[in-house]
Image (cartoon, rainbow, N blue to C red; front, side, top):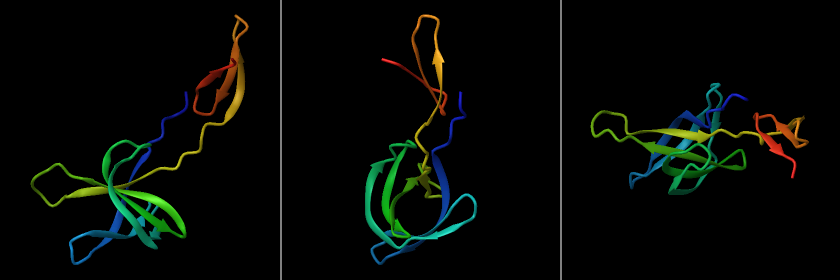
Length: 121
């Protein structure tokens, strides 16, 4: 079975606050240290992270001309300085077929890179 990949990647984000107190992310620092400048914030709304799980403020942003989602996960703590954390959903390639399996009963199926088997119909 293939190793499960963590789809939620916590990232460092530099933000500005406008006069209404709205957080506007300006740069994202990826886990390898590479910093990406956010060209524009297109939308802010409450939404679930469908791939990685969890919910928060979903920022639709444009980075290098491409649209992406950035999530702010609010802290549940009532005290302290940590108001929340930023994360993105890791982009994962869909499983690719890597082989075949044949069973004694004559059935069989395709083996995929994530370790799953999809039987022939």
